[in-house]
Length: 135
Length: 110
Image (cartoon, rainbow over all chains, first blue to last red; front, side):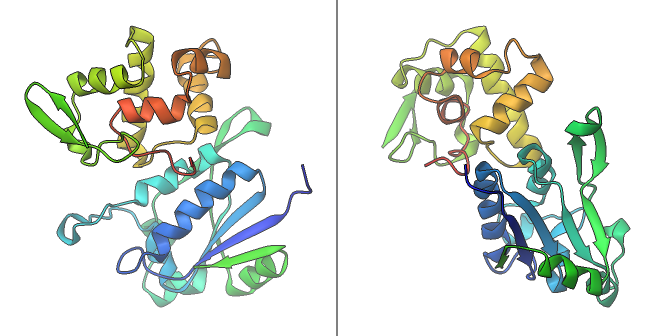
């Protein structure tokens, strides 16, 4: 196998209305098979993708938000959410669904996958990647 | 293309995955299993039911690696391993079991 690269999937769009959010998640799940170091970033309207209590009955599309909770099974355990994007939309961390993973190196303890970071920290995270994919 | 169960016609795609998930029934599962040359035993059902519960919770048909890991966690290493799962579903546990469970093809499965 080749060296492990750091992949960051950047999500800037709301979950519904366009196909970007769902496509991004599908690419993440497919890409997870390649055993790279994968992180997800949520900023701008992308933070709405992680809100709790989504209900899509009235718009006739699948509510795929529960799938984010399966990411831990795919060893995707770093979901960075930009604090400023939450603030600008009147959201707090409490408006986001709980997403956890089990830490193999720590007796399978359940740990939160979502990490709220500042805009400055987000810029550092992006600078630190080998590959950045924008959705 | 379709399956026939109790006089009902149930549409499927070119690979045999049903197109409307709510069409699923246990009788249909037996019918799909026949076309896959699988005799459904309690052990097969255990996996199929597990997949349906996984889909219900996460809205996703898991990749084979993830499925086997999840089975291992829930039913122990005797069942959560490649050998056991491929003996039950020789043409791919995720692929075949998902088809029988009436789920979409697993994401990332080509």
